[in-house]
Image 1 (cartoon, rainbow, N blue to C red):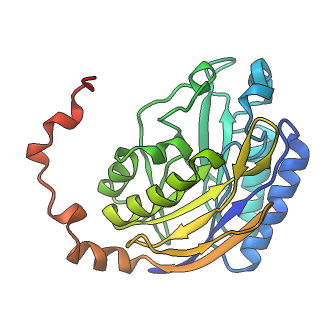
Image 2 (image 1 turned 60 degrees about the horizontal axis):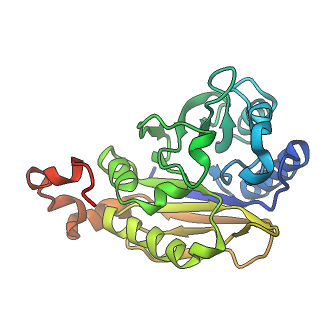
Amino acid sequence: MSKVCIGVVQLQNEPCAKESNLKKAMELVREAAAQGAKIVCLPELFVTGYNLNIFGDRLSELSEGLTGPTITAMRELAAELKIYIIAPISMQIRTSFPLENSAVFINDDGTVQGIYSKNHLFGDEPKFFISNGEYPVFDTKYGKIGVMICCDNNFPEPARILALNGAEIIFMPAAWRIQEADLWKLLISSHACENNVFIAAANTYCEMDDLYLFGHSKIVDPRGIILCESEKKGSDVLVQEIDTASVYEHRACMPGLKDRHPEGYGVLCEPVRV
């Protein structure tokens, strides 16, 4: 099956208001499923909101494991709607810090297939989170799915690694600031085009005195063309039918992957010289 409807949820949430954020997110996931989406992605840290200045040391108590209320509710919802859900949360891997800024990949039968943890931590995030250097690709009945989170988008390697590992669609939960709105537009299309993958980016919308996360969630095709983009100031749902067969059509005629010369790329693994 190469054609599938995919969905991203743009969520206007409140920092630390987990119950109301979860309720709102579930309503929007239902809306996406009602529009035909078979895979739905929520934004980065969707249930806690994203504001490290407000969280402080509270982030540990706000975090959860796989048996916590957020993932339990999302697993039940996935099984009910028979859809895949990507649910990004602050993950309590251990009993306290460090945590992982993670996205839990839930199958359409409600089981957890795996977890991706953000590898490129932004700003003060290293005070709270660790990364593990892993880039899993998840098999689904609709194709191979990769995940990267927010600041991963600032680097060429995550999307390339996922593509080389077989990803046809990359979902990107984010809490992207207005200050980098130009990069949001540029980098998502660039990564999609250079790797010939679909990228579906779910951004948070949040206006606060010290933080403006500007939304503009979008779905981009393997040539970097924007298929749909949210213009709403607030929560929104985007659903788009895509054809993963086009990934291979683009890869057959474009040089990004097929004409690589990895034997000459040794410098890419060397430390940066500044």
